[in-house]
Amino acid sequence: MPFRTSIMTNPGLPFPAQQYGDDVRIVQVQDKTIALVGTAHLSRQSIDLVERIISQERPDTVCIELDHRRYQTLSQPKSWENLDLKQLIRKKQLSTLLVSLILAAYQKRLGGQMGVMPGTELLTAAQTAEALGIPVLLCDRDVRITLRRAWRNTPWFKKGYLLAALVASFFEKPELDEEKLAAMRKQDVLAELMEELGASLPHTKKALIDERDLYMAEHIKQASGQRIVAVVGAGHLEGICRVIGTDHSAALAEITTVRPVSRSWKALAWLIPLGIILALVATGFRHGAEQFKANAIYWTLVNGIPAALGAIAARAHPATIATALVGAPFSSLTPLIGVGYICAFVQVVFCPPLVREFEQIQNDISSFSGWWRNRLLRVFLVFLLSSLGSVLGTFLGGYRIFNTLLS
Image (cartoon, rainbow, N blue to C red):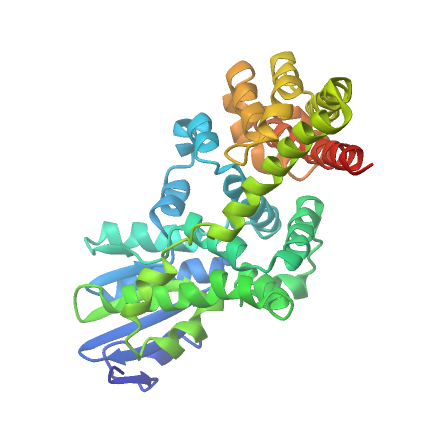
């Protein structure tokens, strides 16, 4: 059901939009007057704007484009001290953490050149509101759900393109002249990035931008009071204005859910190792015990050795290397947990990251040597390289077993 909504730009209304420029849109939704403030996450002007509009207008509530996790990261820079890597590994969330670190490092490098750290204007909005006794509402969706939905919604044949874009951002050294700096102050950096990818990855953009526009619009409308200031990235301004006048509350349940892996994919994940086991047993019946033994030994070595070499390449702890060697042949026969997660857990136990390495993570992530120097990044290397070795071994071992069976 549509709400009564209008965009207001005339002076003399509850929020005088013309006083604040084009970055502020005034929206009337039923009995609420909402000032949508579009910011660039790397702009000193945006910091000044949000501080000025909140201080002058004294709204009933200030909404901010943050979820609780991102707000904690901004407001408590040392919250990483409470990061439980072992728990993250148990929950298979290493990939989500890695993507978050990549994006944060990319923005931090840009922020270093512009003299403003990413998200400073959002934190300023919260601090200004709290100093004035104004309630703050964090209106963005959980970043973990956003990243997982973006990955799940991306077609499998385009996941490689997305990964390539992320890998390229590891080592990109953006050189910004005054013209580029001026342009970036007027727009949201990540929104610009997603607009560029939107044509090739529409499903990914939908999860990262469009769904969040809808989510934030619904939560802004639910904010208490009649005069609301909502501080959001400039890339979300048009989208929120477009959807805020319609009731989309029924869609919230769907866009805050990460769909589990389909039954067909789960069945396939079990069929592959089951097929290898059955083929190995059938080889023994058809060609004798010696051939069964030879294939079993080959499977063990062709899985264990590449996984161990991957761990060695990551400069893993000896216990981690041994775990890769022994664990890969068995973990390859079950989809429940891969050898990469097992090795990452062992690496954290025997070689836990140091405090200073958490502090240096966003600098080290942008250099090749940093990945081996920083113990936290080395955990990711152990996970990735041992997994890659195990996948290679599974392919070679499966080919050998089926080829022997059919010969």
